[in-house]
Length: 343
Ligand code: NDP
Image (cartoon, rainbow, N blue to C red; front, side):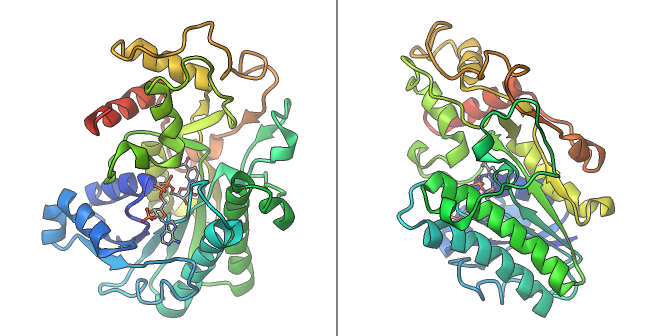
């Protein structure tokens, strides 16, 4: 299949690109600069040479016509995987830095496909558990999160702080996508992939450990001994391995029954305390890790089956065929990838 993948320089997109090329798909990926394209090229020289991988420069997805040219290709695209969206909390203006690129990026690419890429059959959008979770309910014991749930966050709440802003950006972008499908009835189908905290090995170009992607930062901090005296609260207690998220994106266009569905892709519960314990067990060379008596980082009542929401990942297993990796395997592979980058 001929595929357009947006945001190819990102943490999740890099794994998605790996799987796409492995399965023989032909890919064009968008990046913001030629320099970022050149870095990806270094890792995939043979694919570039045989024409299986190409690049399009899209500097800013917040421009409504950002994808006008990128959606056109010869041979034409049959699937589009839209992963690009800002995921960091280092923002001054929530609307401009988070919400606009998320929402305009999503509606912009859908409109450009409708207008200029009639061969596209499937569009897969990277949404998030952020578009599912209701933060006001806290740990919400007795509730089971699934694809039925929508974050009820409002525009006013969105501008309270960058965390709320990010959650709102993902919620508003996904809603805008489904609204557009309903109102404009394009010829393509849409599926969304909604992961919670994504952990996993780094395969994208990383200038230094300081520029670690947002969701892996806590694993890096733990390994660096920053939680020695107190483990921070875990926040969201659900996680998934990046390789399973990447597989979900590819399976979602390969399997016709995935069309027009959301997929809540989660492997299950984690706590920051468990992350520390796994690192300690597998990397005895790290000295500044918390002990069993270090405070913080635990589940609300000490175990996940007490006082914490449930989750249903059934659809992702039944329809996408996901087989989730374990937390221990994920964390071990993640820390090993940090060591290759100089940890
Ligand atoms: P990364 O920060 O590694 O990737 C984000 C990508 O989006 C980068 O390629 C980035 O380009 C690109 N991007 C951001 N803003 C713009 C913009 N204005 N114009 C063009 N490109 C832009 O994070 P992830 O890989 O984790 O995130 C990928 C997707 O997954 C996002 O949609 C995110 O919301 C979603 N997600 C991530 C989760 C996680 O825990 N990691 C959980 C749930 C969802 P550049 O690097 O050049 O700025």
